[in-house]
Figure 1: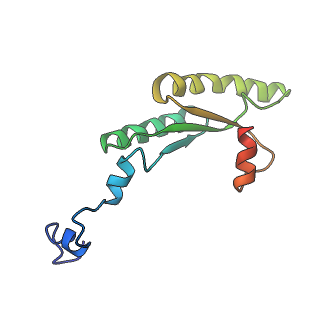
Figure 2 (figure 1 turned 45 degrees about the vertical axis):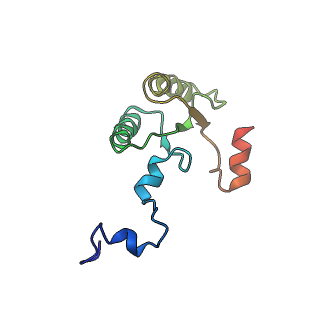
Length: 125
């Protein structure tokens, strides 16, 4: 905040309507903002995302859902090594489903990143 601009004077500076919203108020409003947490299906990234969710909750920001990215468990793989890694993802995916999120999206490992609206829409089909 600029020196000399107190919170009492801030509404006067913002106009005569008498109502304003701060960026924090916008983040806390689920009708205006949908927060998505994105993680990998591995222990450390899931724990870090869960800690972030707890911090957001303390601030009154409730994540709308989680995206679990680069999942081998839903990719079409026949490699024994990748199948083993896919199996190791399952406890983390279950932890997100059971303990952290009401809504999740699983995104498989892809040959190329889905950049742009059309590529993202393809993920939904």
